[in-house]
Image 1 (cartoon, rainbow, N blue to C red):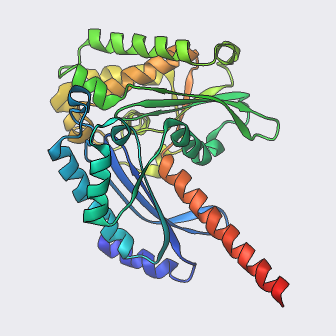
Image 2 (image 1 turned 90 degrees about the horizontal axis):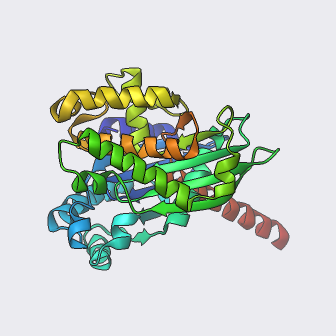
Length: 345
């Protein structure tokens, strides 16, 4: 969002109460969302997203690289500046796989606090999955008895297995976190990402899901009605590429569907473009040119393991889950304060 747009939005929402802010720092991306409550859900008033590749080289060294930390701190400084422009009541900034696994993760968090004023909270895979489910559960089809929610990140992939009740409230059966993501795969298989590498990554992912996922759940999946929900850059980029978008438009992606055959065809087309071609492709670009093929292989591995044929694409995830909870907490606090005031009269 431009500063001019932010100023217009600030005026428009000035009378609707204080905002909340959520930061999601992953292995590949740094994302910010600022939102205010409205009658139904919330209204986003500012966002920020930048590919920082915090986990670059992490697998080889076990540590966050200086250049990666510098890029990330610069992005977080910009996040802090955007937050300062708004009347923000509460901020929750979370960090995931890269900071969880890095030997110098704690030192990096302290540097972030010192240079940006932001306090990053390192969360585990279960909390990641819970927050993603909060935002993505409305996308579960009414016909589904079960759904599988996946988030292909830079350093890990979280997969949640959901039972859908008669009231359409999903129950989390199990979450698995696999130590494989697009950045890790890309570093393990340098460009060009060959057909052989693609097949191996796909097969390894399928085997890992079958081994670690709940077997009775997987066996009971109904491909005609049950489906996957994909909240990741891989899913949204694939959907935008499939639709031939020249410019990414969230309203056309969030909640859209991709069939397994469409995913396979899009992956084949992206492979044929080569690294340079993908870098010049709208909605992929240079930031994801070397990551989209590993992402496709991981996604096809999940499809293979589950036997499901359809993916509901979610341009929502951890940030939206954090925002939803922060706004709910503020609402509960206001109601509690009002009740206390009434009882004191």
